Image (spheres, rainbow, N blue to C red):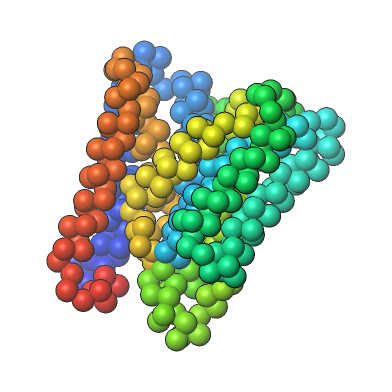
Length: 327
């Protein structure tokens, strides 16, 4: 095997592990499920997995810059509550409401980025503060669970296409193609990796650090808003739930790590986070088909996360010069 291929395999180790783990776990899940792989089973599993995958993608981009966005879960909750009020009515009203929800996500991301970049506050502290604000706004919009969403849109996004293909998977593919791929290939996308690897070196090289960080948080807000819309389509309602927001935030961080993205920044990507999210969601499904108590889920999540972190740490133990990581 050539040195180039060894480098490529080493670079994608986390992604390959997440893909292999997901395929093994999902195969076991389908084998043990009483109904097997039906359209309903596939759609239900896909909807849950895609929802977490979108939030994990939102978390991935700030992490690449060596940041951490603790508000992604609350932006999800905020946009879910907003969508349950305004994504209703005629097709024109639905389109306008959807645009407004996405705009709110972009605004939340822009606020996060501005506080981090111009306020020079640590991302974890800044986004922890803004998440409380977003939760307060969500509570004002939806004091009690309820609301609605355009049925046609919800069914189209969460149902099955001809052949039994879950529609939500196509939504995820569209987001990857429209948002992640252009971002990854853009100047600011490459700048995000440079900033995460070494912000000082990136500054000395003339990398646009400010714009790279701002865009990272703006895209995180947009992806969280897309997740909020999907959640509304799945539940046909909105709820200002602090527990829900916190759970998605923490589980998204776990999905990022399981997918092979370093929390120190500079390496990884959204594709690995997507499969990391599928892995974590499949754990819950396995507990269901094996008729195990749901209280076991945190134990399995913790074990998978620990293994993923340990595999990355083993590599670091043998590194004497950090430049070896990028050879």
